[in-house]
Length: 460
Image (cartoon, rainbow, N blue to C red; front, side, top):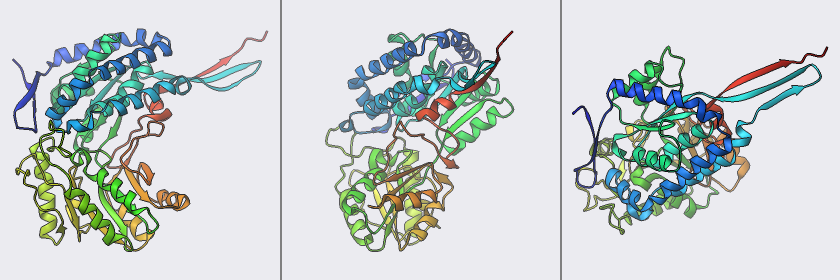
């Protein structure tokens, strides 16, 4: 038996699932089958591809009663939240609805002598490397539009959510998507790098850590394979003096704590105007003290364990360092906090940007709150980060939010909401969050290449 990938459940530390990785030879053979199948798949009418993909999406939905506890076992999200099918379906459905228009030829001009237009051509084989924190929704962001656009897809999912890709492949194959057109694979890092470096793929979409994204780019160096990345985040919220305070507290704290803080666009730092600061902190502490930390299979649990003990260890280290440097921790240790994956959610004040908890990605249930006196101060603090995924602005003034948003180095600007991915908008980032563009019409542009036609007519 070769190398095994093991999903260790955060519930109790047991091995929940394990799968053997493909050999280098088998992995390259799978990629070759995907390439061989691509032309026939792309030759099918767009509506046929749409229908098959959406049938696969529906087949995933039919598994939801099994998927929800499976996710709890693999990555700790409480069953009370019902899984991810709502967002999974919303994103795929939107990309299906806009496919015809997004992939249509771009007419440049036609007269008696010339016809000129630009076609959108699928790249060929798209490699999707998906993360564990929202394993179905993050995967479908690329899988659905890539298939609809006429690419074949090879999916490699995170070890922490080992069974997700298998589920998706099972559902899509049952719905009629050919097995070589959509493949789920289990790969070692070395074989993954070898495939990319060996030009097995025509486009790579990676969601994960900054280090992982750098590894993808290094593997692709010199191959001219396109690489799209969505990496780390340290997303800020800014509460202005005219904000709806209750709505701001409820949404920002939920954005910081939901899924045990393990959200790509989770709120990791909050800046509050001095006139609302004390009230904001008091309300935030009250909310967090009401959370029920526990076994995610228990319907009463509102916060499950972090997906892995090492993730919780990093959050604990950031909190401890901040407190040692003068930060104030407002939440006493929960009795369910076992020093391992089960971690007390925490609110910190008296924090500064000299502390790692306000600079490094935490990806856990902790948020630092700082007092500010002006838009200028808030903008400077929000931009004082190596990351740029989203920013959440709280005000009653749309024009002010737009002006502030124009000056923030970020991929998405929210006003009076947070932690939501609108499939009609491009999901993108800047700085060390990476370079990519998923969903929306731009998602289709990134999963295809332009091909220009300049046709001269014979007129005599």
